[in-house]
Image (cartoon, helix red, strand yellow):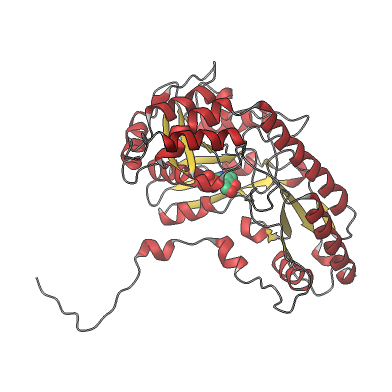
Length: 409
Ligand SMILES: Cc1ncc(COP(=O)(O)O)c(C=O)c1O
């Protein structure tokens, strides 16, 4: 063995070079005017805790405190989660038509950690994965790290952001390792009908491609809509469903996520083993929250969930009413989750060429930040997070209206 190095040269790895977060890259270009006199209002972060109006139920805090004081949960637990915590998830998500047990559950560091494991277990470098456009940017980042090709299927704003099925099918080949479906959706706020989910499942069945169902916004649906877990609609297609505490329970910082394996025909034999192997690399979520999980999932009062939805619905209504009156903007009615996509008719604005410039100028002139659609692979839209307090939303829309009237031709 010889060492010919004569000076320091420490390059980053190929994986580190492939790792990127497009949202950061785009947001870093958006600058708040240091001279700005208006208070900054962020409609950009999908974190419901930022404005103090969405809080986890205090019963969950009590559960955490009880477990903390027991001194019983300070050690290493099983890598894929404690039996009680996995059982609690299984009891919540088991379906008569697709029953699961604790053995079908793997806990992870947030839903992001769950997605990371799912992409890793299904995809080999050089294969491809079907992702929604617009969609949550983490999907593409995980695929890139894994050297998987991201193939984006179009979602159609005029059809309630349903997937363009013909386009989806045209992207499938024998190297397609999975179709990722996000319902309810970030950034669209859409909630798919049973029929649409069945149509996607029919494609997956026809081509024998498994589904990763990102159902982190499960049950956050507004009046007149129903959330259907994908697994409730198929006995044939194997599904890895991911979820977590971040959204429905309003605690993204607690970093608890899960994978549920729905596999009625034992197609996923190797995948189950792979999930366990991968979960053993880094231990799952912290022991105290795992210990409290049965109480959080099963003893949070119904009123908490109802209050969350009511507040989201009221904010959505307020947002639709205000934004639809602004010339040049066209909001798409959300049906759930925490987001609203707004189309920008760029041709009707003077000196604004696209969504990134719209967001840049809105921030510079009005101290209001919305993410440009570019962050979700979807130009000429912006995404609005609808979780701020009503007075903050009203103020933001007032400033947006003034901004648009100044720039509208
Ligand atoms: C669609 C979607 N999936 C997954 C996640 C990640 O959730 P977590 O914070 O639990 O990692 C988010 C977070 O915003 C999301 O919007």
